[in-house]
Image (cartoon, rainbow, N blue to C red; front, side, top):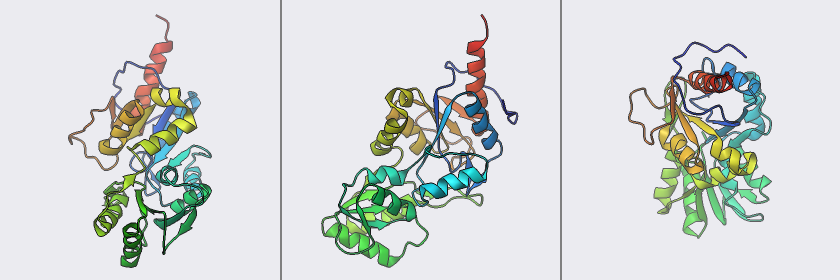
Length: 276
């Protein structure tokens, strides 16, 4: 088993699950810079036979970009990355015109769904996600389409996005502008909401989803998502939530970082295999 950095082991009542769901930003990396110990922790899970599925509210990047970024830090992940863009695309129908107020990942997901991605004009739906090219004109186009009857979908409503230099405005901040500008509340697809939960169940299966552990840095997103799936949650302090903050819902596991959580999960499994 790959050696993990030292951490305090906390006894648990369950062995390691067959699937561990990982948030990316704040758990695995910060702006694609690996959090110390995260790569080794994921290698240890995989060596123990645990499937690792990355469940991210980042909708900006394409799947190939997400997989390439993970591969670049030593984590092959083909077929194991689920994004809020993919969840958002579940809310549109093939053939619909979808105005994308988001990044390339949203365009890709919409087109894979068989819908038509546009940036202006009449639309059946508007999908809003994090992107660094958001402009007033983009806001005007999105609001105009909603005023004309388009459904409003948000890939996620995370107000902030963690980086090594601290949090920056996230996709939820952009979505809030479109909601206010259009006077319409969006249906949100990503964590912690039902469309993302449906996506996870489709990929790993109902039984594995319920038995999984969701590891995240934001209880309002990752902790609530675990409750939506009906699985256990693990809270880490390596992302947007500072140690000592009120955490609601209360997690099943707490660790300094991913390496700490994985040590707990695998130590429990070793204890379960030890002869009585």
